[in-house]
Length: 102
Image (cartoon, rainbow, N blue to C red; front, side, top):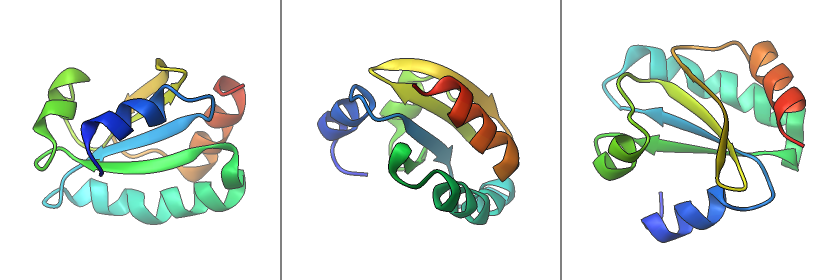
């Protein structure tokens, strides 16, 4: 992740942003990587998908009260549209992005 300022700019933009809060040591987090790749292939550029390592960015983890990883949060215009901890399927994520992000 770049600096915190560009993260804020990103999540405050018109384009929805799916943030994957994860950690290197987390097994389920590793399972999310190919799932998010499938989601990206399905939704193309309608949503940005970024990954934040909670160990490298403890401030972001604290601000969004990340208790466990992986935690996925969908932002648009600075608002949280959806949030879930744990592994999600590509099918579920595509459905959520399609329904929530306008």
